[in-house]
Image (cartoon, rainbow, N blue to C red; front, side):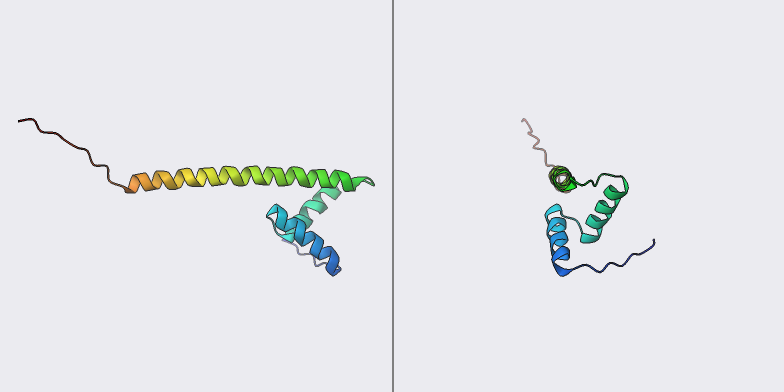
Length: 95
C-alpha cells in the first residue's frame, strides 16, 4: 500500500486526534475518510456544517455498532458459560 507523509501544524493534528478519539478510530483513518469525501465531492464551501453532520452520523453509526457488538459479545459469553457448566438433572426414584 502506498504511503503518504504529511506535515501538519500541531493544532490541526490535535483537532484531528480529538475527533478521531471521539469516533473511536485512528487519526490516519479519519484523514482517509476526509480524503475520500473530498474526492467524492462532498467537501464544499459550506462544507463545515455538512462535514459536522456527516461526522455526527458516523459517530452515531459507530455507537450503534459498538452497542450491537457489546450485546453480541455478552450473548456469546453467556452461551459459552452455559456450555461449560454441566447440566445436572435430578432423578427421583420411587420405592
